[in-house]
Image 1 (cartoon, rainbow, N blue to C red):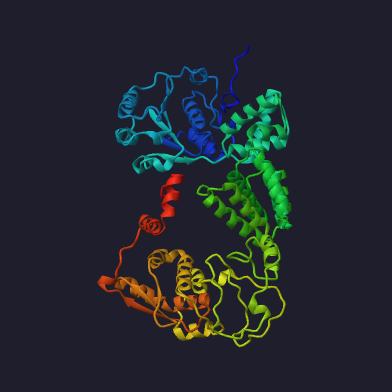
Image 2: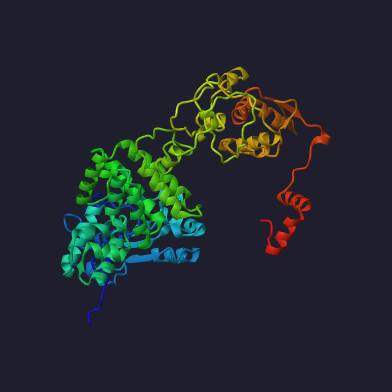
Length: 591
Protein backbone atom coordinates (compact mmCIF):
# COMPACT_ATOMS: atom_id res chain seq x y z
CA UNK A 1 0.00 0.00 0.00
CA UNK A 2 1.36 3.41 -0.95
CA UNK A 3 2.39 5.60 1.97
CA UNK A 4 -0.17 8.30 2.65
CA UNK A 5 1.09 11.91 2.80
CA UNK A 6 -1.18 14.67 4.08
CA UNK A 7 -2.12 17.32 1.53
CA UNK A 8 -0.32 20.10 3.42
CA UNK A 9 3.02 18.28 2.81
CA UNK A 10 2.21 16.65 -0.52
CA UNK A 11 1.22 19.90 -2.19
CA UNK A 12 3.75 22.14 -0.48
CA UNK A 13 5.01 24.76 -2.99
CA UNK A 14 8.45 24.06 -4.46
CA UNK A 15 8.88 27.35 -6.35
CA UNK A 16 8.01 31.01 -5.87
CA UNK A 17 5.32 30.88 -8.56
CA UNK A 18 3.45 28.10 -6.78
CA UNK A 19 3.16 30.06 -3.51
CA UNK A 20 -0.46 31.15 -3.02
CA UNK A 21 -1.47 34.66 -1.99
CA UNK A 22 2.00 36.22 -1.46
CA UNK A 23 2.77 37.59 -4.91
CA UNK A 24 4.37 40.86 -3.75
CA UNK A 25 6.76 39.09 -1.38
CA UNK A 26 7.76 36.37 -3.82
CA UNK A 27 8.37 38.98 -6.53
CA UNK A 28 10.69 40.90 -4.20
CA UNK A 29 12.63 37.76 -3.30
CA UNK A 30 12.97 36.69 -6.96
CA UNK A 31 14.29 40.14 -7.89
CA UNK A 32 16.83 39.93 -5.06
CA UNK A 33 18.02 36.57 -6.40
CA UNK A 34 18.26 37.90 -9.99
CA UNK A 35 20.21 41.00 -8.99
CA UNK A 36 22.37 39.23 -6.44
CA UNK A 37 21.59 41.95 -3.87
CA UNK A 38 21.02 39.73 -0.87
CA UNK A 39 20.74 40.91 2.71
CA UNK A 40 22.48 38.97 5.48
CA UNK A 41 19.26 38.57 7.56
CA UNK A 42 15.56 38.29 6.71
CA UNK A 43 12.54 38.16 9.03
CA UNK A 44 9.37 36.49 7.72
CA UNK A 45 6.40 37.22 9.94
CA UNK A 46 2.66 36.58 9.66
CA UNK A 47 -0.13 34.24 10.81
CA UNK A 48 0.26 30.47 10.89
CA UNK A 49 0.06 28.41 7.73
CA UNK A 50 0.60 31.18 5.17
CA UNK A 51 3.96 30.04 3.76
CA UNK A 52 6.73 31.62 5.86
CA UNK A 53 8.89 28.50 6.26
CA UNK A 54 8.04 27.35 2.74
CA UNK A 55 9.24 30.64 1.24
CA UNK A 56 12.39 30.48 3.37
CA UNK A 57 13.22 27.05 1.92
CA UNK A 58 12.48 28.10 -1.66
CA UNK A 59 14.61 31.23 -1.15
CA UNK A 60 17.49 29.18 0.28
CA UNK A 61 17.30 26.80 -2.69
CA UNK A 62 17.22 29.68 -5.22
CA UNK A 63 20.27 31.57 -3.89
CA UNK A 64 22.37 28.37 -3.95
CA UNK A 65 21.26 27.35 -7.46
CA UNK A 66 24.23 27.15 -9.86
CA UNK A 67 22.17 28.13 -12.93
CA UNK A 68 19.21 30.24 -11.79
CA UNK A 69 16.57 31.11 -14.36
CA UNK A 70 16.06 34.63 -15.64
CA UNK A 71 12.94 35.11 -13.52
CA UNK A 72 14.85 34.27 -10.30
CA UNK A 73 13.56 30.71 -9.91
CA UNK A 74 15.93 27.77 -9.31
CA UNK A 75 16.73 25.43 -12.20
CA UNK A 76 16.01 22.15 -10.34
CA UNK A 77 18.75 20.49 -12.41
CA UNK A 78 22.07 21.43 -10.79
CA UNK A 79 23.66 19.44 -7.97
CA UNK A 80 22.63 22.00 -5.34
CA UNK A 81 18.96 21.88 -6.40
CA UNK A 82 18.96 18.08 -6.56
CA UNK A 83 20.52 17.85 -3.10
CA UNK A 84 17.88 20.18 -1.74
CA UNK A 85 15.01 18.28 -3.40
CA UNK A 86 16.31 14.97 -2.07
CA UNK A 87 16.80 16.36 1.44
CA UNK A 88 20.59 15.89 1.57
CA UNK A 89 21.78 19.49 1.24
CA UNK A 90 24.46 20.58 3.73
CA UNK A 91 24.03 24.26 2.99
CA UNK A 92 20.59 24.67 4.59
CA UNK A 93 20.12 24.35 8.35
CA UNK A 94 16.75 24.53 10.07
CA UNK A 95 16.36 25.19 13.80
CA UNK A 96 13.09 25.04 15.71
CA UNK A 97 13.48 27.78 18.31
CA UNK A 98 10.41 26.54 20.21
CA UNK A 99 12.36 23.49 21.45
CA UNK A 100 15.95 24.79 21.02
CA UNK A 101 15.79 28.18 22.70
CA UNK A 102 18.70 28.10 25.10
CA UNK A 103 22.04 29.92 24.90
CA UNK A 104 23.84 26.61 24.26
CA UNK A 105 21.72 25.90 21.18
CA UNK A 106 22.50 29.31 19.71
CA UNK A 107 26.21 28.98 20.46
CA UNK A 108 26.28 25.62 18.69
CA UNK A 109 24.60 27.25 15.70
CA UNK A 110 27.14 30.07 15.70
CA UNK A 111 29.94 27.50 15.50
CA UNK A 112 28.40 26.16 12.28
CA UNK A 113 28.58 29.63 10.68
CA UNK A 114 32.39 29.57 10.70
CA UNK A 115 32.61 26.69 8.20
CA UNK A 116 32.17 27.81 4.55
CA UNK A 117 29.92 25.76 2.22
CA UNK A 118 31.50 22.93 0.22
CA UNK A 119 28.95 23.12 -2.60
CA UNK A 120 27.13 26.33 -3.49
CA UNK A 121 27.72 29.88 -2.38
CA UNK A 122 25.79 30.37 0.87
CA UNK A 123 24.98 28.63 4.08
CA UNK A 124 21.36 29.48 4.96
CA UNK A 125 20.19 29.19 8.56
CA UNK A 126 16.37 29.07 8.92
CA UNK A 127 15.24 29.67 12.51
CA UNK A 128 11.51 28.95 12.91
CA UNK A 129 9.41 30.45 15.73
CA UNK A 130 12.31 32.75 16.57
CA UNK A 131 10.24 34.67 19.14
CA UNK A 132 10.55 31.63 21.44
CA UNK A 133 14.28 32.25 22.01
CA UNK A 134 15.15 33.31 25.53
CA UNK A 135 16.49 36.80 26.19
CA UNK A 136 19.96 35.39 26.86
CA UNK A 137 19.84 33.45 23.55
CA UNK A 138 18.80 36.63 21.69
CA UNK A 139 21.74 38.50 23.22
CA UNK A 140 24.16 35.73 22.24
CA UNK A 141 22.77 35.86 18.70
CA UNK A 142 23.01 39.66 18.29
CA UNK A 143 26.65 40.10 17.31
CA UNK A 144 26.69 37.29 14.76
CA UNK A 145 23.40 38.51 13.28
CA UNK A 146 24.80 42.02 12.84
CA UNK A 147 28.06 41.01 11.17
CA UNK A 148 27.86 37.39 9.97
CA UNK A 149 30.48 35.84 7.64
CA UNK A 150 29.98 36.69 3.96
CA UNK A 151 28.83 33.14 3.15
CA UNK A 152 26.03 33.13 5.80
CA UNK A 153 22.39 34.25 5.43
CA UNK A 154 19.87 34.06 8.25
CA UNK A 155 16.12 33.65 7.59
CA UNK A 156 14.04 34.04 10.72
CA UNK A 157 10.32 33.13 10.82
CA UNK A 158 7.79 34.05 13.49
CA UNK A 159 4.07 34.41 14.12
CA UNK A 160 4.55 37.05 16.85
CA UNK A 161 6.80 39.86 15.72
CA UNK A 162 5.92 41.93 18.79
CA UNK A 163 7.84 39.49 21.02
CA UNK A 164 11.14 39.96 19.19
CA UNK A 165 13.69 42.40 20.57
CA UNK A 166 13.97 45.72 18.69
CA UNK A 167 17.71 45.14 18.36
CA UNK A 168 16.95 41.98 16.35
CA UNK A 169 14.32 43.69 14.19
CA UNK A 170 16.69 46.52 13.28
CA UNK A 171 19.21 44.03 11.82
CA UNK A 172 16.75 42.27 9.47
CA UNK A 173 14.80 42.91 6.31
CA UNK A 174 11.20 42.39 7.43
CA UNK A 175 8.59 40.70 5.21
CA UNK A 176 4.98 40.64 6.44
CA UNK A 177 2.97 37.74 5.03
CA UNK A 178 -0.74 38.19 4.37
CA UNK A 179 -3.64 35.98 5.47
CA UNK A 180 -5.15 33.80 2.77
CA UNK A 181 -8.36 35.08 1.21
CA UNK A 182 -11.36 32.79 0.92
CA UNK A 183 -11.22 32.85 -2.88
CA UNK A 184 -7.50 31.96 -3.00
CA UNK A 185 -8.04 29.11 -0.57
CA UNK A 186 -11.05 27.74 -2.46
CA UNK A 187 -9.13 27.82 -5.77
CA UNK A 188 -6.21 25.92 -4.24
CA UNK A 189 -8.56 23.34 -2.68
CA UNK A 190 -10.18 22.82 -6.09
CA UNK A 191 -6.78 22.08 -7.59
CA UNK A 192 -5.96 19.58 -4.84
CA UNK A 193 -9.37 17.91 -5.15
CA UNK A 194 -8.98 17.49 -8.92
CA UNK A 195 -5.51 15.97 -8.54
CA UNK A 196 -6.76 13.60 -5.82
CA UNK A 197 -9.87 12.62 -7.82
CA UNK A 198 -12.26 13.95 -5.18
CA UNK A 199 -15.65 15.35 -6.16
CA UNK A 200 -16.87 18.39 -4.27
CA UNK A 201 -19.53 21.06 -3.90
CA UNK A 202 -18.11 24.56 -4.14
CA UNK A 203 -20.18 25.68 -1.15
CA UNK A 204 -18.51 22.94 0.94
CA UNK A 205 -15.04 24.21 0.01
CA UNK A 206 -16.14 27.73 0.98
CA UNK A 207 -17.08 26.48 4.46
CA UNK A 208 -13.64 24.85 4.77
CA UNK A 209 -11.92 28.07 3.65
CA UNK A 210 -13.87 30.18 6.16
CA UNK A 211 -13.14 27.68 8.94
CA UNK A 212 -9.39 27.85 8.15
CA UNK A 213 -9.42 31.57 9.03
CA UNK A 214 -6.72 32.64 6.57
CA UNK A 215 -4.34 29.69 6.95
CA UNK A 216 -3.67 27.48 3.92
CA UNK A 217 -2.17 24.69 6.01
CA UNK A 218 -5.27 24.64 8.22
CA UNK A 219 -7.47 24.58 5.12
CA UNK A 220 -5.65 21.55 3.71
CA UNK A 221 -5.83 19.74 7.05
CA UNK A 222 -9.59 20.36 7.25
CA UNK A 223 -9.90 19.30 3.60
CA UNK A 224 -8.24 15.94 4.39
CA UNK A 225 -10.57 15.46 7.37
CA UNK A 226 -13.65 16.26 5.30
CA UNK A 227 -12.49 13.97 2.45
CA UNK A 228 -12.16 11.07 4.90
CA UNK A 229 -15.60 11.71 6.39
CA UNK A 230 -17.29 12.16 2.99
CA UNK A 231 -15.43 9.23 1.40
CA UNK A 232 -14.30 11.15 -1.66
CA UNK A 233 -17.50 13.19 -2.23
CA UNK A 234 -17.34 16.43 -0.28
CA UNK A 235 -20.84 17.90 0.13
CA UNK A 236 -22.01 20.96 2.03
CA UNK A 237 -24.27 19.11 4.47
CA UNK A 238 -21.60 16.53 5.35
CA UNK A 239 -18.95 19.22 5.87
CA UNK A 240 -21.04 21.28 8.33
CA UNK A 241 -21.93 18.03 10.11
CA UNK A 242 -18.31 16.89 10.30
CA UNK A 243 -16.92 20.27 11.37
CA UNK A 244 -19.88 21.02 13.70
CA UNK A 245 -20.39 24.37 11.95
CA UNK A 246 -23.69 26.20 12.30
CA UNK A 247 -25.28 26.70 8.89
CA UNK A 248 -25.24 30.40 7.95
CA UNK A 249 -28.84 30.03 6.79
CA UNK A 250 -29.79 29.99 10.47
CA UNK A 251 -28.33 33.47 10.88
CA UNK A 252 -30.12 34.75 7.79
CA UNK A 253 -33.35 33.26 9.17
CA UNK A 254 -32.90 34.93 12.57
CA UNK A 255 -32.34 38.31 10.91
CA UNK A 256 -35.44 37.94 8.72
CA UNK A 257 -37.59 36.92 11.71
CA UNK A 258 -36.19 39.83 13.75
CA UNK A 259 -37.20 42.29 11.07
CA UNK A 260 -40.73 40.85 11.25
CA UNK A 261 -40.70 40.90 15.13
CA UNK A 262 -41.48 37.16 15.26
CA UNK A 263 -40.07 36.43 18.72
CA UNK A 264 -41.81 33.07 19.09
CA UNK A 265 -40.38 31.71 15.84
CA UNK A 266 -36.89 32.84 16.89
CA UNK A 267 -37.24 31.02 20.23
CA UNK A 268 -38.23 27.80 18.43
CA UNK A 269 -35.27 28.15 16.05
CA UNK A 270 -32.83 28.83 18.92
CA UNK A 271 -34.13 25.78 20.79
CA UNK A 272 -33.52 23.54 17.75
CA UNK A 273 -29.98 24.96 17.37
CA UNK A 274 -29.11 24.35 21.04
CA UNK A 275 -30.58 20.82 20.93
CA UNK A 276 -28.11 20.03 18.13
CA UNK A 277 -25.27 20.69 20.58
CA UNK A 278 -24.30 24.23 19.58
CA UNK A 279 -23.26 26.54 22.41
CA UNK A 280 -25.33 29.67 22.98
CA UNK A 281 -22.19 31.80 23.16
CA UNK A 282 -21.06 30.57 19.73
CA UNK A 283 -24.52 31.37 18.38
CA UNK A 284 -24.30 34.95 19.67
CA UNK A 285 -20.74 35.41 18.35
CA UNK A 286 -21.70 33.97 14.98
CA UNK A 287 -24.76 36.23 14.76
CA UNK A 288 -22.63 39.25 15.68
CA UNK A 289 -20.17 38.41 12.87
CA UNK A 290 -23.13 37.92 10.56
CA UNK A 291 -24.50 41.37 11.49
CA UNK A 292 -21.06 42.86 10.86
CA UNK A 293 -21.04 41.31 7.39
CA UNK A 294 -24.49 42.76 6.69
CA UNK A 295 -23.20 46.17 7.71
CA UNK A 296 -20.20 45.83 5.39
CA UNK A 297 -22.49 44.73 2.54
CA UNK A 298 -24.60 47.90 2.77
CA UNK A 299 -21.89 50.09 1.25
CA UNK A 300 -20.00 49.24 -1.97
CA UNK A 301 -16.83 50.74 -0.43
CA UNK A 302 -16.84 48.23 2.45
CA UNK A 303 -18.00 45.26 0.39
CA UNK A 304 -14.38 44.03 -0.19
CA UNK A 305 -14.05 43.67 3.59
CA UNK A 306 -16.33 40.62 3.47
CA UNK A 307 -14.17 37.49 3.75
CA UNK A 308 -16.75 35.24 2.13
CA UNK A 309 -17.32 33.58 -1.21
CA UNK A 310 -18.89 35.35 -4.19
CA UNK A 311 -22.18 33.50 -3.71
CA UNK A 312 -22.36 34.42 -0.02
CA UNK A 313 -21.47 38.03 -0.84
CA UNK A 314 -24.51 38.29 -3.11
CA UNK A 315 -26.69 36.84 -0.36
CA UNK A 316 -25.39 39.42 2.12
CA UNK A 317 -26.05 42.23 -0.33
CA UNK A 318 -29.62 41.04 -0.74
CA UNK A 319 -30.36 40.92 3.01
CA UNK A 320 -28.51 44.22 3.58
CA UNK A 321 -31.07 46.02 1.41
CA UNK A 322 -33.84 44.85 3.75
CA UNK A 323 -32.08 45.80 7.01
CA UNK A 324 -32.26 49.44 8.18
CA UNK A 325 -28.85 50.74 9.22
CA UNK A 326 -30.17 51.68 12.65
CA UNK A 327 -31.35 48.08 13.17
CA UNK A 328 -27.87 46.71 12.40
CA UNK A 329 -26.14 49.22 14.71
CA UNK A 330 -28.44 48.45 17.65
CA UNK A 331 -28.26 44.69 17.07
CA UNK A 332 -24.45 44.79 17.11
CA UNK A 333 -24.50 46.75 20.37
CA UNK A 334 -26.92 44.30 22.02
CA UNK A 335 -25.00 41.22 20.83
CA UNK A 336 -21.68 42.67 21.94
CA UNK A 337 -23.10 43.34 25.42
CA UNK A 338 -24.33 39.74 25.59
CA UNK A 339 -20.86 38.49 24.64
CA UNK A 340 -19.34 40.58 27.45
CA UNK A 341 -21.80 39.23 30.05
CA UNK A 342 -21.94 35.62 28.81
CA UNK A 343 -19.13 34.13 30.90
CA UNK A 344 -20.40 35.73 34.12
CA UNK A 345 -24.02 34.71 33.57
CA UNK A 346 -25.39 31.90 35.73
CA UNK A 347 -28.24 31.23 33.26
CA UNK A 348 -26.56 31.46 29.88
CA UNK A 349 -29.46 30.20 27.82
CA UNK A 350 -31.82 32.78 29.30
CA UNK A 351 -29.28 35.53 28.56
CA UNK A 352 -29.08 34.41 24.91
CA UNK A 353 -32.86 34.26 24.59
CA UNK A 354 -33.38 37.70 26.13
CA UNK A 355 -30.71 39.10 23.82
CA UNK A 356 -32.46 37.73 20.74
CA UNK A 357 -35.81 39.04 22.02
CA UNK A 358 -34.28 42.51 22.28
CA UNK A 359 -32.89 42.21 18.74
CA UNK A 360 -36.30 41.12 17.46
CA UNK A 361 -37.96 44.16 19.05
CA UNK A 362 -35.67 46.83 17.59
CA UNK A 363 -38.00 47.48 14.66
CA UNK A 364 -41.19 46.89 16.65
CA UNK A 365 -43.51 49.94 16.78
CA UNK A 366 -43.75 51.76 20.08
CA UNK A 367 -46.45 50.61 22.51
CA UNK A 368 -49.25 53.10 23.21
CA UNK A 369 -48.45 53.02 26.88
CA UNK A 370 -45.02 53.57 28.33
CA UNK A 371 -42.78 50.54 27.94
CA UNK A 372 -42.20 48.17 30.80
CA UNK A 373 -38.76 47.79 32.34
CA UNK A 374 -36.04 50.44 32.49
CA UNK A 375 -36.27 51.17 28.77
CA UNK A 376 -39.51 51.34 26.77
CA UNK A 377 -37.92 49.31 24.00
CA UNK A 378 -36.99 46.36 26.21
CA UNK A 379 -39.29 43.31 26.05
CA UNK A 380 -42.32 45.37 24.96
CA UNK A 381 -44.52 42.57 23.70
CA UNK A 382 -43.99 40.48 26.82
CA UNK A 383 -45.28 43.26 29.05
CA UNK A 384 -47.99 44.54 26.73
CA UNK A 385 -50.63 42.37 28.38
CA UNK A 386 -49.49 43.48 31.83
CA UNK A 387 -49.88 47.19 31.11
CA UNK A 388 -53.34 46.75 29.57
CA UNK A 389 -54.75 44.62 32.38
CA UNK A 390 -53.51 46.56 35.42
CA UNK A 391 -56.42 47.35 37.84
CA UNK A 392 -57.31 51.01 38.10
CA UNK A 393 -56.09 52.82 41.19
CA UNK A 394 -58.36 54.61 43.62
CA UNK A 395 -57.04 57.91 42.29
CA UNK A 396 -58.34 57.06 38.81
CA UNK A 397 -61.95 56.35 39.79
CA UNK A 398 -62.64 58.62 42.79
CA UNK A 399 -62.15 62.19 43.85
CA UNK A 400 -59.33 62.72 46.34
CA UNK A 401 -61.08 64.41 49.22
CA UNK A 402 -58.40 64.55 51.86
CA UNK A 403 -54.92 65.56 50.69
CA UNK A 404 -53.24 64.23 53.82
CA UNK A 405 -54.67 60.72 53.63
CA UNK A 406 -52.15 57.94 54.15
CA UNK A 407 -51.39 56.05 50.96
CA UNK A 408 -50.78 52.29 50.97
CA UNK A 409 -47.21 51.32 51.67
CA UNK A 410 -45.10 50.54 48.64
CA UNK A 411 -42.16 48.25 48.27
CA UNK A 412 -38.95 48.67 46.27
CA UNK A 413 -40.19 46.25 43.63
CA UNK A 414 -43.70 47.78 43.30
CA UNK A 415 -44.08 49.99 40.21
CA UNK A 416 -45.23 53.53 40.94
CA UNK A 417 -48.24 54.60 38.87
CA UNK A 418 -47.67 58.12 37.54
CA UNK A 419 -50.49 60.39 36.34
CA UNK A 420 -49.37 63.25 34.17
CA UNK A 421 -52.04 65.66 35.57
CA UNK A 422 -51.31 68.52 37.98
CA UNK A 423 -52.22 68.38 41.66
CA UNK A 424 -55.20 70.67 41.17
CA UNK A 425 -56.84 68.22 38.78
CA UNK A 426 -58.08 65.80 41.43
CA UNK A 427 -61.32 64.95 39.65
CA UNK A 428 -61.93 61.58 38.06
CA UNK A 429 -59.50 60.79 35.26
CA UNK A 430 -60.49 59.30 31.93
CA UNK A 431 -60.79 55.54 31.61
CA UNK A 432 -57.59 55.30 29.56
CA UNK A 433 -55.02 52.63 30.28
CA UNK A 434 -52.76 53.33 33.25
CA UNK A 435 -49.16 54.17 32.36
CA UNK A 436 -46.37 52.29 34.08
CA UNK A 437 -43.20 54.42 34.21
CA UNK A 438 -40.62 52.60 36.28
CA UNK A 439 -37.99 54.88 34.79
CA UNK A 440 -39.36 57.83 36.82
CA UNK A 441 -38.52 56.17 40.14
CA UNK A 442 -35.37 57.93 41.32
CA UNK A 443 -35.75 60.42 38.47
CA UNK A 444 -32.77 62.55 39.38
CA UNK A 445 -30.26 59.69 39.57
CA UNK A 446 -31.42 58.26 36.27
CA UNK A 447 -30.71 61.67 34.72
CA UNK A 448 -27.17 61.48 36.11
CA UNK A 449 -26.42 58.50 33.83
CA UNK A 450 -27.16 60.56 30.73
CA UNK A 451 -25.99 64.03 31.80
CA UNK A 452 -22.64 63.67 33.50
CA UNK A 453 -21.90 67.39 33.63
CA UNK A 454 -25.45 68.70 34.26
CA UNK A 455 -25.44 71.24 37.13
CA UNK A 456 -27.34 70.29 40.25
CA UNK A 457 -30.83 71.75 40.58
CA UNK A 458 -31.59 74.29 43.24
CA UNK A 459 -34.27 73.82 45.89
CA UNK A 460 -36.53 76.32 44.07
CA UNK A 461 -36.37 74.34 40.78
CA UNK A 462 -36.92 71.12 42.72
CA UNK A 463 -40.12 72.55 44.17
CA UNK A 464 -41.39 73.34 40.69
CA UNK A 465 -40.75 69.76 39.51
CA UNK A 466 -42.62 68.27 42.50
CA UNK A 467 -45.44 70.75 42.61
CA UNK A 468 -47.86 68.09 41.36
CA UNK A 469 -47.09 65.62 44.17
CA UNK A 470 -49.70 65.13 46.87
CA UNK A 471 -49.04 66.17 50.44
CA UNK A 472 -49.50 62.80 52.14
CA UNK A 473 -48.37 61.56 55.52
CA UNK A 474 -45.61 58.98 55.55
CA UNK A 475 -44.17 56.79 58.29
CA UNK A 476 -40.63 56.16 59.43
CA UNK A 477 -40.78 52.70 57.89
CA UNK A 478 -41.83 54.11 54.52
CA UNK A 479 -39.04 56.70 54.70
CA UNK A 480 -36.39 54.02 55.32
CA UNK A 481 -37.80 51.89 52.51
CA UNK A 482 -37.68 54.75 49.99
CA UNK A 483 -34.18 55.69 51.17
CA UNK A 484 -32.87 52.17 50.56
CA UNK A 485 -34.66 51.98 47.22
CA UNK A 486 -33.06 55.28 46.16
CA UNK A 487 -29.58 54.06 47.14
CA UNK A 488 -30.03 50.88 45.09
CA UNK A 489 -30.90 52.91 41.99
CA UNK A 490 -28.02 55.37 42.16
CA UNK A 491 -25.76 55.28 39.04
CA UNK A 492 -22.64 53.12 38.84
CA UNK A 493 -20.26 56.07 39.15
CA UNK A 494 -21.79 56.84 42.58
CA UNK A 495 -21.64 53.22 43.78
CA UNK A 496 -19.20 54.06 46.61
CA UNK A 497 -21.37 56.84 48.00
CA UNK A 498 -24.49 54.68 47.63
CA UNK A 499 -22.85 51.90 49.64
CA UNK A 500 -22.08 54.32 52.51
CA UNK A 501 -25.54 55.89 52.35
CA UNK A 502 -27.14 52.46 52.82
CA UNK A 503 -25.64 52.38 56.33
CA UNK A 504 -27.43 55.63 57.25
CA UNK A 505 -30.95 55.78 58.67
CA UNK A 506 -32.88 59.00 57.97
CA UNK A 507 -35.24 59.93 60.80
CA UNK A 508 -38.39 62.04 60.92
CA UNK A 509 -37.81 64.86 63.44
CA UNK A 510 -40.63 67.37 63.03
CA UNK A 511 -42.88 66.02 60.26
CA UNK A 512 -42.23 66.33 57.36
CA UNK A 513 -38.65 67.33 58.23
CA UNK A 514 -36.09 64.54 57.94
CA UNK A 515 -32.71 64.51 59.64
CA UNK A 516 -29.73 62.59 58.26
CA UNK A 517 -26.87 61.85 60.64
CA UNK A 518 -23.45 61.65 58.90
CA UNK A 519 -20.29 60.46 60.63
CA UNK A 520 -17.60 62.44 58.73
CA UNK A 521 -17.13 65.79 57.00
CA UNK A 522 -16.07 64.38 53.62
CA UNK A 523 -19.27 62.38 53.21
CA UNK A 524 -21.26 65.32 54.57
CA UNK A 525 -19.93 67.57 51.78
CA UNK A 526 -20.58 64.95 49.11
CA UNK A 527 -24.18 64.40 50.18
CA UNK A 528 -24.74 68.14 50.55
CA UNK A 529 -23.86 68.52 46.84
CA UNK A 530 -26.74 66.21 45.86
CA UNK A 531 -29.09 67.19 48.67
CA UNK A 532 -31.56 68.81 46.28
CA UNK A 533 -31.77 65.69 44.15
CA UNK A 534 -32.22 63.47 47.20
CA UNK A 535 -35.09 65.69 48.36
CA UNK A 536 -36.80 65.51 44.96
CA UNK A 537 -36.44 61.72 44.83
CA UNK A 538 -37.84 61.18 48.34
CA UNK A 539 -40.64 63.72 47.76
CA UNK A 540 -41.67 61.81 44.65
CA UNK A 541 -41.47 58.38 46.31
CA UNK A 542 -43.26 59.48 49.52
CA UNK A 543 -45.71 61.75 47.66
CA UNK A 544 -45.06 64.72 49.90
CA UNK A 545 -43.74 67.98 48.47
CA UNK A 546 -43.11 69.60 51.88
CA UNK A 547 -40.38 67.20 52.88
CA UNK A 548 -37.10 68.83 53.94
CA UNK A 549 -33.71 67.21 54.39
CA UNK A 550 -31.40 68.36 57.18
CA UNK A 551 -27.81 67.12 57.31
CA UNK A 552 -25.98 66.97 60.62
CA UNK A 553 -22.48 65.82 61.57
CA UNK A 554 -22.74 63.09 64.20
CA UNK A 555 -21.18 63.46 67.64
CA UNK A 556 -18.68 60.88 68.80
CA UNK A 557 -21.18 59.15 71.10
CA UNK A 558 -23.79 59.02 68.30
CA UNK A 559 -21.64 56.96 65.94
CA UNK A 560 -22.70 53.34 66.28
CA UNK A 561 -20.55 50.51 64.89
CA UNK A 562 -21.74 49.08 61.57
CA UNK A 563 -23.25 45.64 62.08
CA UNK A 564 -22.17 42.70 59.99
CA UNK A 565 -24.61 40.17 58.57
CA UNK A 566 -23.76 37.83 61.44
CA UNK A 567 -24.51 40.58 64.00
CA UNK A 568 -27.89 41.24 62.38
CA UNK A 569 -28.68 37.52 62.37
CA UNK A 570 -27.69 37.22 66.05
CA UNK A 571 -30.10 40.03 66.93
CA UNK A 572 -32.87 38.31 64.97
CA UNK A 573 -32.49 34.94 66.68
CA UNK A 574 -32.27 36.55 70.10
CA UNK A 575 -35.51 38.37 69.48
CA UNK A 576 -37.13 35.25 67.99
CA UNK A 577 -35.73 31.88 69.22
CA UNK A 578 -37.77 30.07 66.55
CA UNK A 579 -35.32 31.29 63.91
CA UNK A 580 -32.40 29.62 65.70
CA UNK A 581 -34.46 26.42 66.10
CA UNK A 582 -35.22 26.43 62.36
CA UNK A 583 -31.52 26.96 61.56
CA UNK A 584 -30.54 23.97 63.70
CA UNK A 585 -33.21 21.68 62.26
CA UNK A 586 -32.22 22.53 58.66
CA UNK A 587 -28.48 22.63 59.52
CA UNK A 588 -28.05 26.03 57.87
CA UNK A 589 -25.01 28.29 57.95
CA UNK A 590 -24.95 32.01 57.21
CA UNK A 591 -23.26 32.51 53.83
